[in-house]
Amino acid sequence: MTLPGSPHIAYRGDDLYIEGRSVAALAREHGTPLYAYSQASMLDALASYQRALTGRDHLICYAMKANSSLAVLQTFARAGCGFDIVSGGELERVLAIGVAAKKIVFSGVGKTRAEMRRALEAGVLCFNVESEAELTLLSEIAAAVGKTARVSLRINPDVDAGTHPYISTGLKGNKFGIAHEDALANYLRAAALPGLEVVGIDCHIGSQITDAGPYLDALDRLLELVEAIEARGITIHHLDLGGGLGITYTDEVPPSAETLVRSLLERIDARGHGHRKVMFEPGRSLVGNAGVLVSEVLYVKPGEQKNFCIVDAAMNDLMRPAMYQAWMNIVPCVKRAEPAVLLDVVGPVCESGDWLGKDRELAVRAGDFVAVLSAGAYSMSMASNYNTRGRAAEVMVAGDAAWLIRDREPVAALFAGEHLLPTG
Ligand SMILES: *Cc1c(COP(=O)(O)O)cnc(C)c1O
Image (tube, rainbow, N blue to C red; front, side, top):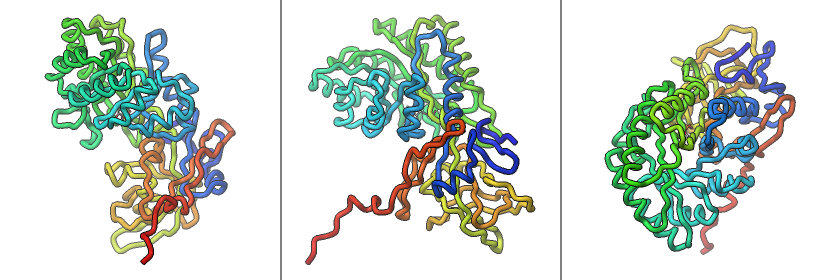
């Protein structure tokens, strides 16, 4: 039986499988909570972008904050991806697997001096700059280290991506990007600064976007600007349209990456910009549907108003429900032939916000395993140690193979860097 999300995560009879491996068997082998990924899902998702971009000068930069585990980065690096980073930590992570700096773009509103210096020394492809103050500082630092910083300005096109307010980034009043009306002045300034070379323009309007409309609107606004900027003698080599494409958590029907990219390219060509290199920064749409969070049912607790299914995964393992009130599908790893009961699936953390799913119909008993679906993006990468809980282990499945790609974090590691007060 197929489930919404990925064709590689499906039931064989009553057992949930990721590609060729039983999820319950993986949970028994590696313990829970456990993140398990389908590598084929990741590669399929990437291939959808690649098909639309074949024959065109392009770079797909995986937005690694969605899931920055090394084996996930390797999967995309081997398939030819570049990377979009938002911190010095992410830069070190991606350099650690041997990615060429020339395939890395550096985004983010709050780059520090140290991060700029390190990225310049490494030789990243482009800094996506988000303010006038950042332009000034970047130029200063580039001059000081004797390098030129290639820059693109992140434009806030003021379009409504129609998504959750916490993941909408392209509206006025948002902290991200440079306002459309200030863009030209900032390009003129960038072109005049000594340490900078203008190479592109970018935008990123939000996340979990399920409609092509906002992308086309943002593209139109961007192309208007490109024309105005080039009229002033500044060449724009690449258009970077960001990430943000949504996935199916329940009944959302976003366009496929291939369809979305084709319609954007059509618009780019129709407006006479077909000679430019195009870039995308997809995160969620490459990894979201590829992962599940597997958890053991600890207790089933009937309540006066509600029944609770208490599992061993919690908000520290999976923040999305607590942070965005996100709805994520929860299914048994082995189906029971019993009537389902209405219950809230909650974790052991001491917060009422610690829930994974509310009002779910499930037939489960203590000791069963359940899987939270579509947990490949913004899940493990947002995990914390709240309640002094070590972070989950991770497994990558490819066909019949499964590799442990991250050990469960041992409790001793959680306070290894701490210091007691002096005695006396
Ligand atoms: C987070 C982010 C992305 C990726 O967004 P998704 O919704 O995961 O595709 C791309 N670009 C920038 C600048 C981002 O901050």
